[in-house]
Image (cartoon, rainbow, N blue to C red; front, side, top):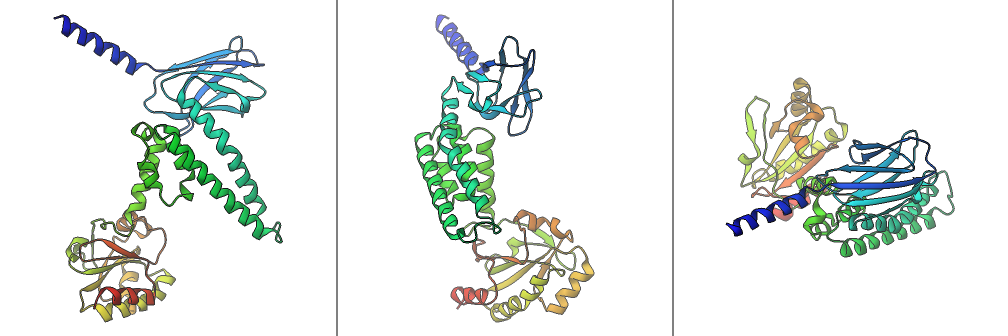
Length: 356
C-alpha cells in the first residue's frame, strides 16, 4: 500500500509540474497611470492576457500549449516588447519611452530568442537597406557591386543560421529561424530533420512541415498523387489506370495562349511515342465545355482529356499546386515523377532518352 501511495504521490507531483503555466512579471518605468497592458500572440493576433499597470508593474499568468512568439503591448502605443514564451517564469524590465531596448530574462527559451535578435537583426537590416539601394531607379552605376554585396550578406546570413541551429538544435527558436530564412535554403527538410523533438513544437514548426509537404507534391523522385476526374464523355478516369506507361500529365486550357502555342509540341511527342508505352493525360482548367471540346478538336489533342470545368479551381490542379499554365509532369510506369515542365524539344529529347 505504501508503494502504491508513493506512485500516486509521484504522479500527482509530475502532473502538477506538467500543468504549471507561465508567469510574466514586468517593471516598466515612466508609464502613464493605470494604462492597459496586454499579451498578444504574434502568429494569430489573439490577446491571451491583460493587466493594468499599477506603480509601474504588471503580471500575466496563463497556460500555453506550445512555445510561440508573443508581444507585450500598451494601449495607445505602437511599440511593443516581443519575447519567445512557453510555460516559464519571465521578467521584463523596460522604459515606456524606449521599449525596443527592454530587458527580457528568465528562461533558456527567452535567452535563445534574445541571442537570435542580437545576431540576425543587424544582418536583416543590412539586407533591407541594400535591397532598397538596388532599386532600378537608383545607383545604376553601382548596381552590380550592390548586388554582389547583397549576395555576400545573404551568405553570411545562412552561415549564422548554420551556427545557431547547430548550437540550439533543441530550441523551438531554431524552427522559427529556419522558417524565416526558408526562401534562401535549398535543404530545408535536412536542416529541420536535424533538430531535436523539443524544437519541433509550435506553429513555426508546423509551418515548416507544411512547406516540406507542399514541396514534395511535385518533386522529382516522388510518387505522383492519385486522382480521378471525368473525361469529355463524363466517364471517371483515374491516374492509376495508366500504370505501366510513361504519362505526361499536361495542365492547360482553351483560353491559355501559351498553352495553345505549346500544344503542337505535345502532339508531336504523342504521335512519335504513342506506340512505345507513352501517352498524355490532359487536365484542362476550362470552365466552358464547348470551348474545351473545340480546342481539343482544333489542336488535335487526341488523348485522354479530363476536367471538372472549374477553371483555376480544378481539383487536380489544386492538388498539384499548379499556379501557372502550361505546366506538366512526366510520370514513369511505376507512377513516380521523373521530370517537370518539359517544353518543345526538351520533351522529345527526354522521351528519346527513356523510350527506345
